[in-house]
Structure formats: structure tokens, C-alpha cells
Length: 117
Image 1: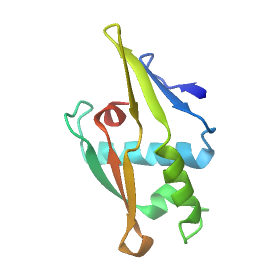
Image 2: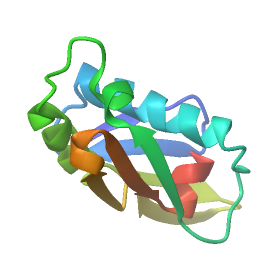
Image 3: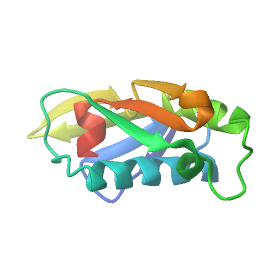
Image 4: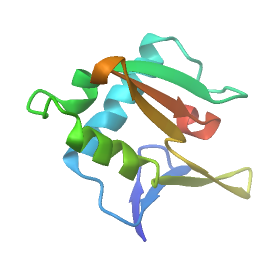
């Protein structure tokens, strides 16, 4: 399992497959959508985000969302882990996703630990 440390010393991303540039870009776009929605860093429940698929695909992404689906599927396998006050914890980064409105929107369910990270 590959481990990638993110800026916070308390949180690490782990995936059995390497994070592609498209996956990293999608993570940043999801984080931007959380910021735009003014979702606080600490939430008790998962958060549904609606993001235009073109933002998650990137400028050169295919309009048929083939690679976006692959990217979102892989992101559901990315795990978060860390330690809080000496106690270990773990979660997934993306719990669920749906491509809606004829492929133009993505609904993404981000668990509380994913929101915090």
C-alpha cells in the first residue's frame, strides 16, 4: 500500500494504486467546492457536494466522463489515516459518487474525516 503524507502531520493518504495527476486535481476541486460552500472543517455528518463534472475532468478531460468515472472510482479506494491525541483513526476520502444531469454534474459524498482533511 502506497502512503502519501499531506501537509498536516496528523493525516496521511493511503492508496493501493498511485494517485494520478487527475486524481490530485479532482481532490483539489472537491476541496475548493467545500470551501465555496463554506463547509466547516469539523462536521458531524457526511457532506454531499454538487460539482460541475467539467471542473473535475479538467480542461483536457474527455466529455464522455469515462476517465472521470475511473478517477472517482479510484478515489473511493483512497484511505485517510492519522492520530488524534494518541489514538489512531481511519476513513475513506470519498464515500460515494454519482454523475447526474446527463453527465454535467457530479454528486460526491465526503465523510467527516475527508472534510477535515
